[in-house]
Image (cartoon, rainbow, N blue to C red; front, top):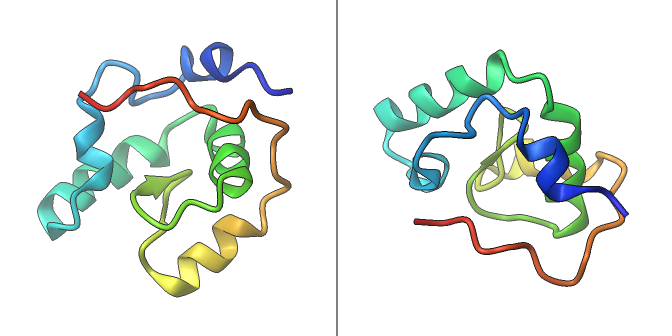
Length: 90
């Protein structure tokens, strides 16, 4: 099982409001993707998104709400994760 809190503590987005990754406004989306571009844990983020078959938000630098990008995201090897993610949205 992946240590969700362990990898997340290294994420570029750690101290940002999580709503940033769930807003489809182009300007906000660009800001979110900029964090992903330099994030050292993109792989782990993608694995968690794949495990949960995320269809909303930005994960590992991919927009899960864009079908072509969601297909790439869901191709990540799914992480072994608990049934519930800890509540992180503020």
